[in-house]
Length: 232
Image 1: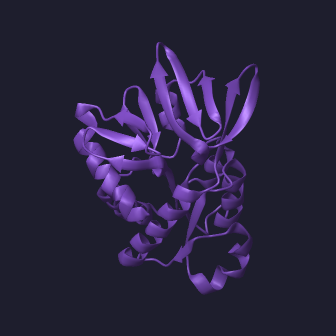
Image 2: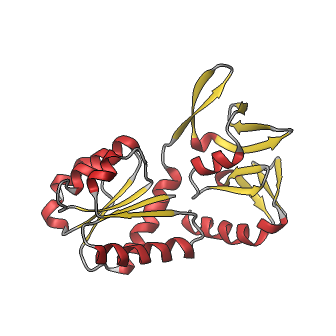
């Protein structure tokens, strides 16, 4: 998960960053946090984010304008504004903002709001394009059941069947949401939404597809699986 914190005060950035890191680590979510005091640089960048915290009153570019730019890059990005709620509620209606936070932060409220955000991200309507048979095809991320590497080829299995794809499993692991995709094995990347049975050594997808869990992954996956269940 790619996270952005943009505020013109370093003190606020550092405090919020530590809270978000603690939340993500406690729930076993893979993440990267980018922090900046320069909203203009963020707007000009091609980077898309899954979760952003934005100060509203910033020099050069206000938080609302930046949020609109970020939503052009990822329409499902979760936006949290750092400000007083009542003053800006009407301005943010069209941005589908998750929460407003006042400074200093209420940590309990922050974590509760992040729980709701993770639920949203888990079920978000996200799609990707895959190249197959000389054409690009749009596929919903949650229609992907798993990805397999076999004999130097990569196979993407969806509800509609099998597709041979050019991207490696490592590239797909970078591209897909880490909240519900997990690299069980160097040759298997699975969508946890389809797991119907699990033990330390293997998982079953839709009761019929049996996927091994690599020995070195077993302890980490056990933790990630139960963290995933907590968010459901």
